[in-house]
Amino acid sequence: MTEKVIAAIKRGEVVILPLEHSYVYACDAFSFAAVNRLHQLRNDPPGIAAQVIVGKVALLGGLAQGVTPEVKELAEEFWPGLLTLNLPQNQSLSWDLGDGGNLTNFVVRMPDQIATLEVVNATGPLAIAAATFAGAVPQTRFENRHQLEALDIGELMAGPLSTVVALTGENLAVTRVGALTLEALRKVVPTIELANQ
Image (tube, rainbow, N blue to C red; front, side):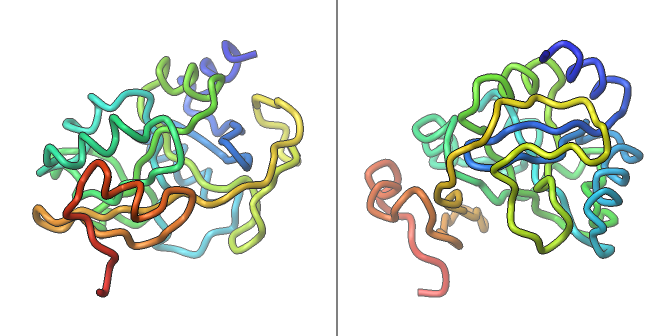
């Protein structure tokens, strides 16, 4: 099943993959046409950036600039899992995640889903967005209204959102508390703060 999905991504197509608690559209993060198609499927308004998933912590250095030791420590401790990092993107990257190239940051994580990790490790970084229309509730049950290649592993358990941590300069701040608490993060990086505190 994963082989067909991997081949579709390499052909520049959008596929459907499971994360921990919902299904997402996914495609090659470096294919402008595929990312554009992903946003069309969702009926996204202009300027919305897709998220990114990776299969290895080591890829962060190539995608983001100014990655601090603390960022790597968080990723190594909580990936794969429900930690999303908001990082300054490497200015040499030739990608457009749907924001018209206007954003200087991107969000990235490594999902705790074996089949999806197998795919992303075979393809490289993937752009993702919930497999619903913009603004709709994420899908825990598989639906394939567009007949895309997909990994259907049945109904997923509903669960918490990922915790989002943003890097500004050398400072880390939690911009959304989700599955991971501030206390859990501080066991790894004691200096991390809540945003707007």
